[in-house]
Amino acid sequence: MNQSEWAGPIELEFTIDKDHSSLRYNSMLMTQSFSYYPPPVFVGSNKKDDAPERIILTLGKVKESGWDSKFKSEVRNTVENVFNYLVYDFEEEMGHSIKYFAKDLKGNATLYAPKGLFRGLKYPEKLYVAIRLIT
Image (cartoon, rainbow, N blue to C red; front, side):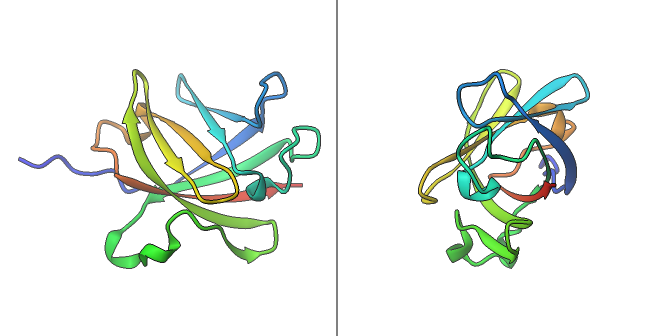
């Protein structure tokens, strides 16, 4: 029997982690911490002092039939610096999270999705992450 795959989407608010050495945002999903390391182009800066304090991420499964492979790991702007999305590829299963990675953006982006996000369903091989900056 095939296990159903999580599709999403889910929307979560993240807050910048001012104590971390890298540009990192955190959120809580139930009782699990959710860390997001955005590429600087996503938030308009690679400096914590210049980056927005809060962002909203929408995460969902990339539906293979609906996505052209040229979209992989490319930021697409629909409104300048307000809404972008990026495709992440599965990298590895970790203790309490699933690690996803995007590259080729003048830098890298890492997403540690808590296993609780998927609610016991099979996690997808590719996720899209859409971002909105809260100003």
